[in-house]
Length: 222
Image (tube, rainbow, N blue to C red; front, side, top):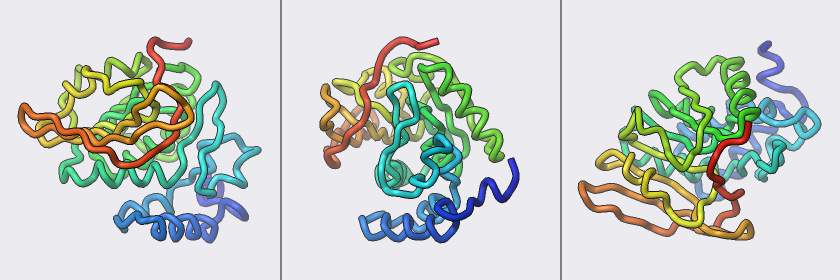
């Protein structure tokens, strides 16, 4: 993948990305390291070429198979709150999707472990992320409800689809002091973004804001 393709031109250029960063800053994202990362991440490579002119709008976009690439604000908000753990050695992502959130996590965490239930998305995300030189990511094609017990506990967990309630298996894979960002709700119209924190044997849940995600589905789709 050549440098021009990654850096973009026209509606995918550095100037367009800067406008997105300025908007995120105005919406309350404060971590300047994260804002810089978002500005440098080629979001247009994670979506269909026909939608690339919309890549740096602050909106969710379809990526096929009933899935979406998350709104940049939500990606930034969830990542920023996860970074407040202080330790980002191991981060688990449930729902690789197109790999955009994975890419952001890969630049703030030592190692990202990402799980996807749809094989085509799992394969495409891996190809895209490898193509832009991100090699600190471990991929698993599996049911996200199970997490990735082999590498637990995790300093942070991000869930990019909404279960009807918080899965206990994911909570059990949080390290002491770890955080999980997860949308929770049984409808697609609105869910609650919840911060889950482990403090020893104690689990704390905090409502953050209303969000809209696709449902978290059990099983795998080959």
